[in-house]
Image (cartoon, rainbow, N blue to C red):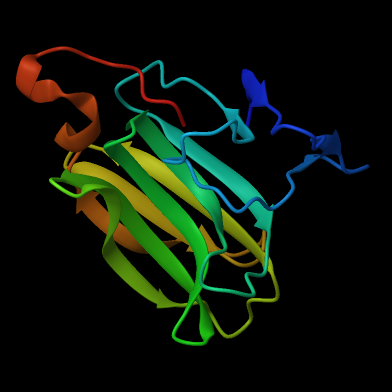
Length: 169
């Protein structure tokens, strides 16, 4: 990921890990938290794009989640990554929803991680003609497996207003 925004959480450092990449400390907040959260980001600059990352993460509790986020606002964002539920590591695609009780997350799809998952995964999001495509793989050599496709772009693009907004990836 070629990043342009590096935000360090209060009191914690984000540091190079000695290889290609950064070590991001696990935090108890999420992208919808009203706090100084740490993240690495890139502003979406084109209508058609592809973004991918290699991630090393093994969740231990249901509150732990890490992955890629496509963030337009607190109540307009998708999250794709690894979480813990049903006593297992899961691939999860979710989006923010806002109602009278506030902002929460709604699961679009989840499934158990592949058998060969050992804490390392490659995540990818692409913008296709008919929506977003979310994919994953567990080794650098294999092809990406489509996790979910035809996910509506209007949720983030605000196309209903005929305006293009750059989502934070």
